[in-house]
Length: 300
Image (cartoon, rainbow, N blue to C red; front, top):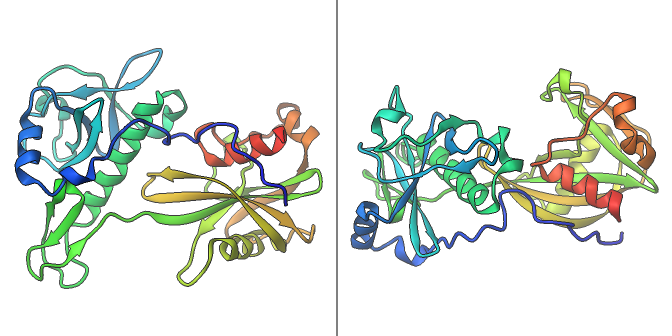
């Protein structure tokens, strides 16, 4: 299978954020940077990001919030320390902010509009704060967890075990056969939007990425896949996935739908995709690697 080069970076990637991992273990440096007037905070509340700007949305970077709340050191950008803070414990998060700075917005609603640097920062912040919020107790002994190393490690206060942030690997693949591509519609997709997307699924223990592609395609639509070619990857903090994008060459054409998971799946021609509005269907959102896989295949 001929390799298809990505036409542009995927959303949430390519930002200039320097994660500066070497600074995380220095508690004195963390303490100083957290309280420095030049340091900036991206703020989350119930999974939503504080956003400013009407025409061009941007991350609202504030000074240190006037409250104790879970925080993570994200890194440096242009030598400025960048932190994330979670104000979900507050009924009104604006009361903890020293300045008026925008509104809290679901990140999925504006990712394609965000500047690259902001998208990278917000994706990192959302993933890390979700991990902190959902891993309060040690999986080994049940003891309470305490953050250390800038929030990137959770240390069990009872048995001393260290726990690290997780990203769940998931393959996402555009299955092609000649001049046709296979797109499906999961039951999770909104019915009113009627969009068809690439197939996807989580990688299982003891499984290679290529084998995961072949298994997921066969499980969801009954199509056998042969050659598999890598395209690109994308962090997907909804809540904690790493999407690994592939093209997969179909060996069979008959679709046998896994009806418990899939609402529909079809083979589409290039003409079908170009004429999708007249045919009454849509493609996945612009912020997804699924859309990149489709667009790059069409352009190849």
